[in-house]
Amino acid sequence: MREIFDRAIKLAEENRLRLRVPNEVKQVLNLRGMHYHYRPEFFVQLQGRTHFQFPKDAFTLSPDEICVIPAGVPHGERVEPEEGKPFRNLVAGFYNNTLSLHFAYEARPHHPDIDVIEFFDAPNLDVFLTLANSLTQTFHSQGPARAAVLKGFTIALLGLFRNIVETGTGQLNSDIGKVFRAKCLVREQFANPELSVQHIAATLGCSADYLSHLFHTETKERLTHYIQRIRIQGAILALESTSLNISEIAYAGGFADPAYFARIFKQHRGMTPQEYRARLDARHSEVESQPKTVFFDRLDFTHGQPKPIGAEEPAAPAKRPARLGGTGGRPGNKR
Image (tube, rainbow, N blue to C red):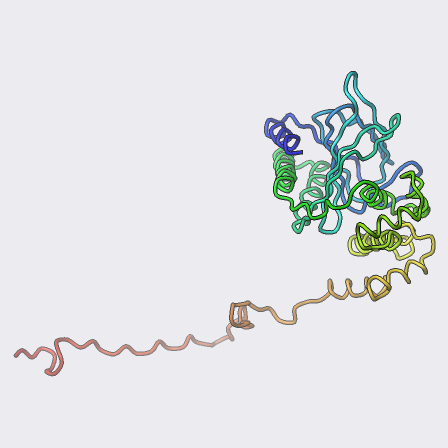
C-alpha cells in the first residue's frame, strides 16, 4: 500500500494521474444491480479495468486512474483482467472513525471481491471526508483554478492515505477471515432488506450458527446487533446530511417497516428518529443571544456596541510634573 500511494502521489504531482467522478444524482436510490454508501468511496486502479455503471452515466477505470464516488450515488461494478495480468485495485471506505483499505480481485468472471483488507483508526476522518467531498464538487465545477484545486486536493488526500498506512495503529486488525468478510458484507449491503445472518453465512459458505459464534468470539458483539448498528449509523448520517423523510431513510437503510426502524433506532440512541432530527433542527436554529468575545478568563459582551451620540472620551489623567534635580531643593536652585 505504501508503494501504491507513493507512486500515485508522484503521478499526481506530474499531472499523469487521471481522476474520474460520476455525475451526482438523487441519493440513496435502490436500483437493481447497484449499491451505494452513505460516505464517499475511493478507488485506485492497479491492473485490469473496472467498468462502473451509474444511474446517469458510465465509465471505465484503467490503470493509473483514480475514482471518487460521492456519498449516496448508486453504482454497479464489472471488472476484467488485462492480457497477462489479473484484475487488481485498491479501495478505500469510510466508516465511523474508521478507514478501510482493501485489495480487490476477480473472484469469479467479472465480479470483484475482497482479497486483503485492513482497518485503521481515523480520529481525523472528517479531514478525509472533506477532501473527498471537495474533490467531487470541484470536479464538476468550472472555476478558473479548477485544475490546480483538483491537483492540490488529490495530492492531499493521497498523502493522508499514505500517512495512515505508515502510522496506523492496527488495533482493528485482530478480526480475521470470515469475520472480516462478514463486516465488509454488512457495510456493503446494509441497504439490502434481505441482509441477514443466514444470507451472510450462505455467501461465506458456512452455517449461520458457526458464523454467529465466530463473530461473537472475535468481536464480543452479536452479528445481528452489528447489522442493526451499521444500519442505524447510516440512518444517523442520513438524518444529519439529507432532507429525506423518516420512512425514506428507513427503506434506504434496509428496514422494510418504518415503525420497526423507529423502535430499533430508539434502542440504539435512546430517542426516536423524529426526536433526533428535532434536536438537530433546534441546534441548527440556535442563535447567540448576544455577541461576545471569548478571552481565556472571561467573556466580553461589550465588543461592537456603538458609542452613544454626544458621548465624549474620558479625559486622560493629569500627568505629575517631572522633578528636576535631586531630593530637596527647588528647581533651578544650585548648591
